[in-house]
Figure 1 (cartoon, helix red, strand yellow):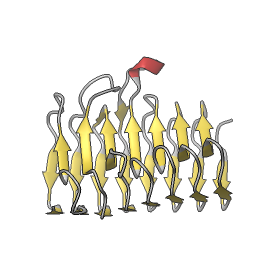
Figure 2 (cartoon, one colour):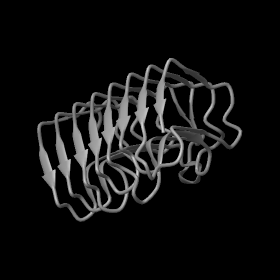
Figure 3 (cartoon, one colour):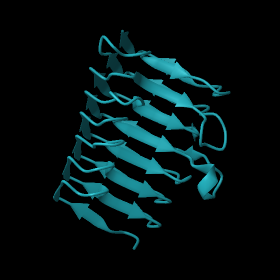
Length: 197
């Protein structure tokens, strides 16, 4: 199911995921409200060239607001509001165990507002095996674990050669680091961010 636009839905109290896009390319998920779903607000898997924009994903009970996974390159995740999710606001995971190269390349994560997430761990923005990507102009505040993280657990390699520019990160008093880079994640450029912990 390629080239599908999902626009303007209210998806609430679902037993697993609010909106799921899997094995589908060049889709758009836009202007949706996903609240109080069991595991994720929006989930993608092997969804290449997807645009996820202007959504509000809140109060996911077990995991994340937006979860982009499975080596799918070229995602654009912009102008979303992700708040009060149990784990991450936005989680990107290369998932090498699921097939593919385990690397999400050429992501653009821009202009999102992310707050109140992470009482169960995670980050405002997580990048596991995310490389050659751009993370810019995001506002993260009152998150309870890390601000943003670049690392490798399920990815095929460290999160490398990313550009993290012009973000504002104001952590909650019980949080960890504003910026967390680990696991052979090299060549990243962190420039012109405001970090308050």
